[in-house]
Image 1 (cartoon, rainbow, N blue to C red):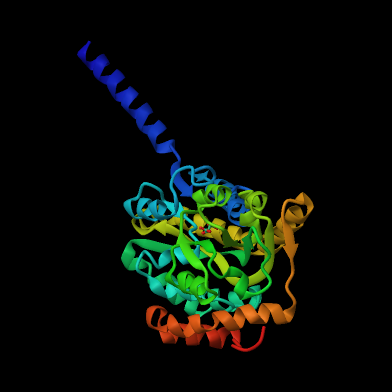
Image 2 (tube, rainbow, N blue to C red):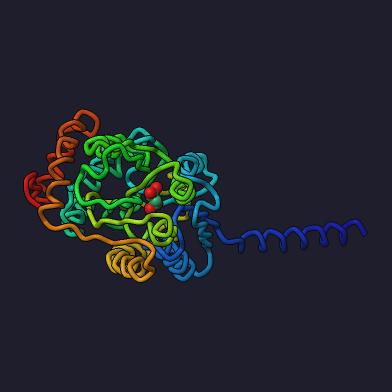
Length: 334
Ligand code: LMR
């Protein structure tokens, strides 16, 4: 009797152990934008590739639109291990203490995606990701969004049109200086709160790549949008280092493969997604889209250029110079 009970117990134990062994490893991937944005789509692609390549051993759960955490909280959640993966904008690493990342926020520092890519694919890109390690974070790669434009309820043709305007920005000292350089009043605010702040007039305007503006419906509460393309917004995909290092080596290699594919996809679709969003904004008829002349854009660049020098102490002169070298930066031309 006793022996058969023992056998039954052992058998049940073996079954539950086997069931446990088959439980997938869950990766919670939190982000703050909509699903139908470059980042949202790339996150979904990573989830799909991860499931395929690990043959179901890994399940990536994507939480879009700040459903789990807002901007600042998500970084803390990653460090604590409450989520395993994020793709915060590069502007969000300054508050973490890795101020060099704010080089990406310098106005007009990248003339196009190619110039940006030379930095993210080169030594500077690697060095910056390595600076995350002491924070318990591993950087896996860079995903594009695009170039930011200003929106307001009044027309924007020159820097003077931004004077005295309350403009929402991400939490970056460089972006604060950028807004001050044109006489605006920078207002740091979480991404998930921007639509309401624009709607209620808590802020007058903001800066965004058009895919973010459109998918958050900000164009419905902003009468004017000017394609200033005055700065870059992109992401670093990051994981909790302890979690990542603790994965079985074969699974980690499969996930690295999935990430490589998702990264290629992200950087292929970003420009097209932003162009499609711009067309959709135009079609909505809710906001007037203005494309500045070359001279008008140059006036924005001239007004904002002092930010580069002013922020040298914070970002580091060498980082800025290295980026200039990679991009062939010209302070006086577009
Ligand atoms: C923002 O806060 O404006 C952006 O970082 C949102 C995003 O992730 O694209």
